[in-house]
Figure 1: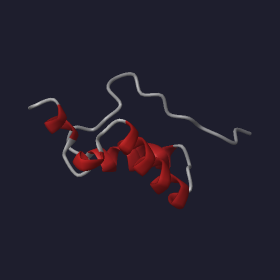
Figure 2: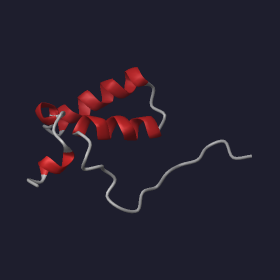
Figure 3: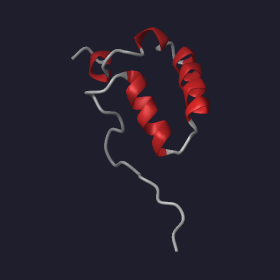
Length: 65
């Protein structure tokens, strides 16, 4: 019996209609990262890649669409 099923996306792995934060939430959930830990990691990585101030922007806005 399979105990774990993974998802591997073959195209761009972000949804342009979601915010930066929502995309990270989605992917963290898909990887079963507990909520409190997920929130911490998202904040940490957004600061690291200098997107913390744009966390609520739609992903499509990051490319100037």
